[in-house]
Structure formats: C-alpha cells, structure tokens
Length: 218
Image (cartoon, rainbow, N blue to C red):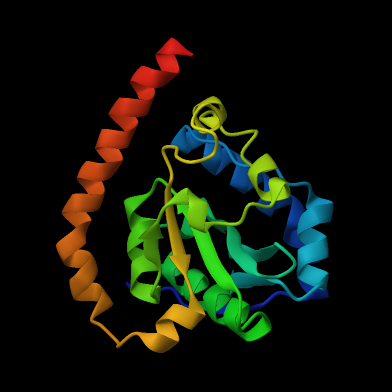
C-alpha cells in the first residue's frame, strides 16, 4: 500500500471552508479523551487562519487532514500551539508530529523571543514536545494571563485545577525557552526522552490516581 502523502502549509483564506469541521473534530476528540478544551467557534478558527497563525494539512485529494493554530499570551511573551487535531481518517499516520513541527517553526518565526508552552496529558504529545526541545516545568513557569486559564473552564478537571490554585493538575506543563536553549548545549532529545518516558508514564499515573481521589472529595 502506498504511503499517504500530505500537504502541510500555513493556512490561507481558501481554507476557511474547513473551519466548522475542524471545530467539530476538536470537540469530539476532547470528549473521547475524557478531557475538555475551550470549545472554539468557526469564527475563531477563521480569524486565526486570516491572521496567518494556523497550519493546515491536506491530503493529495484536497481533503482536510489536520490543523493547529497559534495563541499568544502576556503581550506575546508566551506562545501556545493549540487545537492540534487530525481527521479520524488519517490518524496513526505520523501526521500529528508533522503538523506540530510545522506550527512550532511558524511560532519561532513569528515570535522568536517568546516562550512556547503547552499542557498535555498525552504521552505521545509529550514525546513530540520533548523531541522539539520542550522541557517539563512547573505551572508557575507558564503565563499568568487569566485569559489563558479561562480556557480550562470547559475541562472536566477544572475544579481540580482551581482547588490547586492553578499550581497543578492532571496535565503536564512543558516549555520551550529560546533564551535557555541559546545558552545550553545540544542534546540527543530522542535518547533523553527514551530514558524519561517510563518516568513520565509513572508520573502521569500517579497524578491521575492522586487527583481522582482529591476530586471525589470536592
């Protein structure tokens, strides 16, 4: 079977027609994972596309295959690559990694001095982030912009986050700091993650067990 090829590029006005299906797939994916994200409206996705802050993946036949966009916080000091989604038809093809790499490069190009961060409960996303140079950090190293944290309100774990005064939750925080990277020596991120992956898995399970108990008491 011939391997599926994709066109991955910065989204343009011609891709606005996919905004509604992108929103629906984001919501469906979050529901399936048992977590929540701030549900976006098609108008919001359209805005990101027109601002040149989104990456889209298309199949050779022109079908929508994947999407991700950039959000900024703290007057551009912090950047998040949000809404990473792959069409169910094209999952398990390695496309998520390729989209993540493209949006990461776009983020560095548009905001070269910004700290790029993310929150995730998925080991696969943690591996991709680690390969790109992200490091696990405490929540205190993320943006303190209230607008960002409002985005967690639709998550099923929001009460846990607030009970911890936004200092911890089920998600693992990861950060790419260009200033720190400029000072540090290159390292084999693949080998580094391979060594840490079991620790990450144990850490995630421990957090889930701990916070589930806490949640029952809330």
